[in-house]
Amino acid sequence: MNEEMNDEMQEREEAMPMNCSHFKEALDDLDRTGMPAMMLREAALEHAETCGRCAQLMTDTEALDFSFHQIAAHDGNLQAPARVEAALLQEFRAQRAAQSNKKGNWRLAALASAAAVLLALGFSLRHVSLSHTTSVASETSQSTLNANVQQGSAEANNEATEVAENVSTDAQDATGFVSLPYATDPGTLEGGTVVRVELTRAALVSMGLPVADAGSLDRIPADIMLSEDGAPQAIRLVSSTNLGQ
Amino acid sequence: MTEPVELTDDGLLCRVMAGDEDAFGLLYKRRHPSLYRFALHMSGNTAVAEDVTQEVFLALIRDPKRFDPAKGTLAGFLFGVARNHLRKRWEQDRRIVSLIGDADELGPLASGNGNGNHSNGSGAHVNGNGNGHYVVPTTRDEFASIENVTRVRQAIGTLPENYREVVVLCELEEMSYEEAAAALECPVGTVRSRLHRARAILLEKLRDARPVRRATAVGE
Image 1 (cartoon, rainbow over the protein chains, first blue to last red):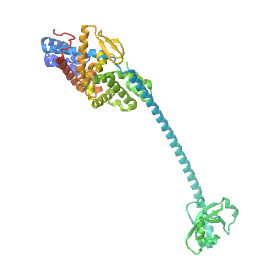
Image 2 (tube, one colour; image 1 turned 120 degrees about the horizontal axis):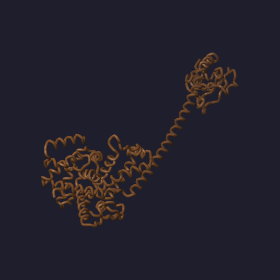
Image 3 (cartoon, chains in turn blue, orange; image 1 turned 45 degrees about the horizontal axis):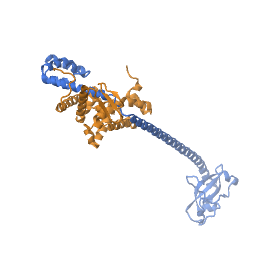
Image 4 (cartoon, rainbow over the protein chains, first blue to last red; image 1 turned 60 degrees about the vertical axis):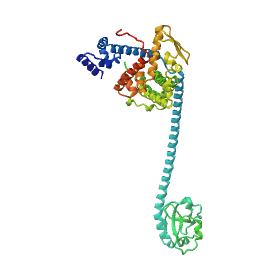
């Protein structure tokens, strides 16, 4: 940009002699380093020699520049007092400490979150594993149960129905297991698989359970213990309140 | 010769952001004098200049990401923050601008360095006691010179803010037009025209007050 301005000024200088207007325009930059007007200095001085007003203006301008230089020299070493730097450094340290605390808190939070996720993952895996085992067992037992119930218990009228979930958890109100009349191995009760079914009262009575109102057609949930080969070995009512129904 | 990357303003700022206290100290030492003088010349008040300098660097400490290298230099950014703080102060208290003529507040500016006793280069002895500063001229010429400088300083203080900024940066801080334009976030042409106008106003004021002392007698 300066080169363009230099060229422009040079062309102007060559084209016409300096007048008062050009003089005023160039005056402020006559002594400014790197400015194109410096090239016009000689022409400006020549003009000032022939024009009293411009000579006065140049004198005033130079006096002003001289004052600027003096002020700059006077103030050149002025600095903020040391207390400003001390206060800033203190703030810098405080800020850094706060940031590192913040980072520490974030790390702690991240660790806690990771631990929580791992725990949740562990629990869900365990749950999935248990559900899988139970559903495989109940699928196996369902067919066997149906077959056995149909075969061995004419009184049950093929009424056994599987209820999807497994059982054992809500046994607080349950009655004790009662061996079925045709149980082949009552000793396996301890390690057998339990399957929840819904049976009619009549079927339950036929299996030896003490259920009132045997003629009723409603179904009552019961747990059936299956042996390893899937044969029903024992039965219990899920809720003892059913006994009185 | 180019400066090592870590010693450029941007490099130092990166280190500051990483918590390097030495880098902050270096950056402060490099940049604060011109900011302090700018605030001092703009406000005419040492307390304000200290506060503004502190606020500028506090802004850098608290939120260094506010500086975007794509938008300009760090120096320009710091001057911008200083200007904003000065404007806020002027809005809060307009009296700051009218301090011209207040000998107590102009003390350090009228006498030069406020860091202790020294000679000011023109032969006058400058005494500083940490709070008030004064110059003891030893000759008639020195007295006239100091008087003239004081008058110019006072005249600068009465300039409108946008003119005063360019005078402080271009004449007192001796920045180039380009540097001043970066600091003031305006085009170079604007800086140039404002400076031209500011100098004309100053000459007018000084002529009205008393003819300024002539450094060189052209045509005489």
